[in-house]
Amino acid sequence: MGSPATNPDDQSTPRPLVVLLVDDQLMVGESVRRMIADQPDIEFHYCQDPMKAIEMANAVRPTVILQDLVMPEIDGLQLVRFYRANPATRQTPMIVLSSKEEPAIKAKAFALGANDYLVKLPDKLEVVARIRYHSQAYINLLERNEAYKRLEESQRQLAAELRQASRYAQSLLPRPLTKGDIRIDWRFVPSTHLGGDMFGYHWLDDNHFAMYLLDVSGHGVGSSLLAVSVNNLLASQALPNTDFLNPGQVLERLNMIFPMERQDDKYFTIWYGVFNKNDRTLTYSNAAHPAAILHTGKDSSDVSLQTLESVGFAVGMMDGTEFENQTVTLGPFARLLLFSDGVYEIELVSDGSTWKYDHLVEYLSSLSLESPVSDSLLGHVRSIGGSDSLADDFSIVEIWL
Image (cartoon, rainbow, N blue to C red; front, side, top):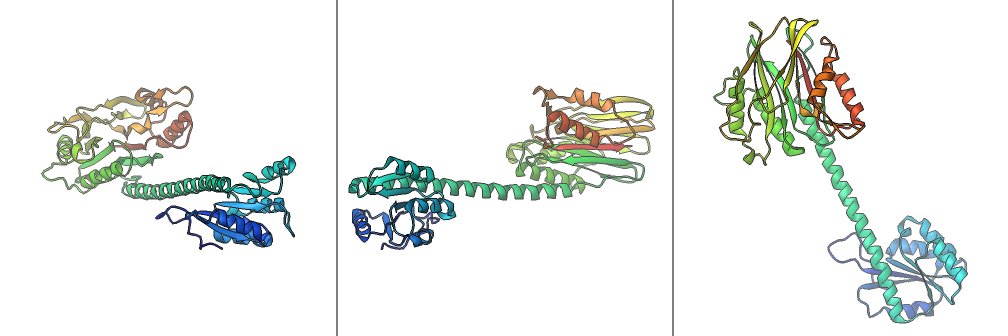
């Protein structure tokens, strides 16, 4: 009986209300059919053989099952148990039909998973009302589950795309330098959200070595793409009319090319420096980036600590900003640390306070100047933050000059 069931997954039209009646009496089946015959949005299916009830339920996918309790070959309560064990009908509303009010039977039916109880045959208005009530609740459940599923799939795809973007950004990072006049070690640990940290270094000529670390505001693909764009320009020395030996001019040119109003209101901080190997001077300019930490002196046992502070605004914030150059002379021993604020702006798990720049300087002062500090610092940050996952990118570059 009834027309073929519409696919409930088709969201182009409203879901139909699909009734499956399981009752061995043809008279009951015909009576229920007539009750809902004038309801155009209700599809009716009748199963006289209780042994085929599960098979038919799987085929028609009812939004409510009307189940007789007294039938040959199988007890109706047992069938209720089977419905709840069957994946396709595990959550389908069930209205059990009984010839009389029996509190004990009613209680058992509810205990096994029935949703409602009717003494057959009730008035048409009541039957239709209960069919509509239980069917609509079930349809709402299905639609909510499908919405959650679509959301989970969307989030899964987004997470995969973010991981791919993160891998691409990391692929652009230079390799550590373990030999030669300059040695460099670094650590980059992306945060739980795709961030905008990027760094690089390269020889400009036989005598001058450039190094930089930048941090784009915000998180997400937009921040990462801006960081990649800036890095590509610096690594390829593709900024027009720019003397890359002049850090301040480099930042001014970046400020002209990347105004925040054309970058979805994103700006970036950057520390950019050039080391002159012949006279051992370091010239740098800093656009609101965390101050680099320099240890320099006669040797690793006789050094002074300097913080190479920022001057001016972040790149992109204000048109026409001038960025000053600062120059320091390095002793025979020099170690420079470049990093982003994700290295020290850590919320302490102990009391919720923030581990700040001064705490970072104090911590670094307790470590050896000869050995890389990145792994020790990363472990410390994770420990005081109470998690291996970081709220911001962790970027640190250690340079021995």
